[in-house]
Length: 172
Image (cartoon, rainbow, N blue to C red):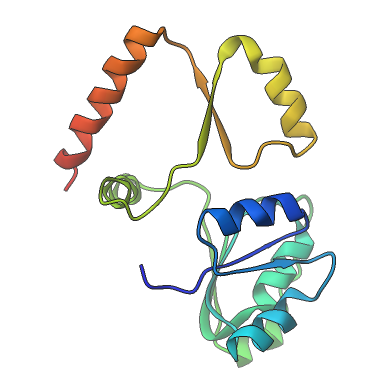
């Protein structure tokens, strides 16, 4: 959509995956200060920051990467309380939004983006029988994006794919 996309993580493999999916810049927060590096690379901070990691450190870094009049969206739910740096938020007119679940309108917009090829759905299809191995991989951070459990046979799968393809244009 013409945006400069930056990804921050502490795992080089996940950063390589983000780069493969189209991130313009990637920063390993264990090795460098991502806010300082973002400023150096772009000449400023981000207009929008989306924090999906359930980590207080990620929340702090996200707000520190948000530019004046920018928006920081908190999606992950870390344990405990999050002390917001009030002076910085107020002085820089930063908007902080929380997002727990999307609306039907959000879903329709997301499906429309996908139908127009604007987003890449990076999934790994696995049979339900592999659920224990999948949980093990999730616990060790060995899942680069999303695993979708396949509850169907091959014949049913091709039918359900067709239903999804037919449904997406109806959302426009």
